[in-house]
Amino acid sequence: MVESLNTKVDLAIDATSFAGVADYGKIMIGDKGFEFYNSRDYRKFIQIPWEEVDYVIASVLFKGKWIPRYAIRTKKNGTYTFSSKEAKKVLRAVRNYVDPNHMVYSLSFLDVVKRALKSTFKKKS
Image (cartoon, rainbow, N blue to C red; front, side, top):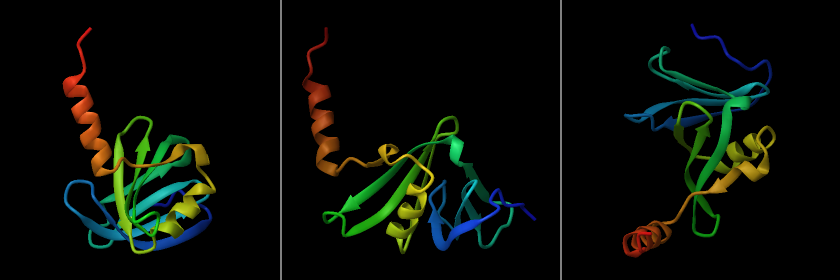
């Protein structure tokens, strides 16, 4: 069995991890880090200590009414994407441990298209 990083759990909620194929399980947010445990296979888990978290990126739609997914970018190991039914609760719990300046919105579809067009037509110097 996997041992938890946390000594105190603030929030435990059902979630989906999008690391490769979608895995269903639970997210646990506590005093030492962010953890995801798969509900079917105990060997599939993600543990991210708070010192390792670089940015938390939220995909926000309808002016903040709906947050379909959020991602945690780590300093060394890349980006992990998750979703849960109550994403606002999760992000509020994460905000207690991560600097609010490191919690950002993801780019919208139009922003991605604008950047692509600008980089295509940009003069090479």
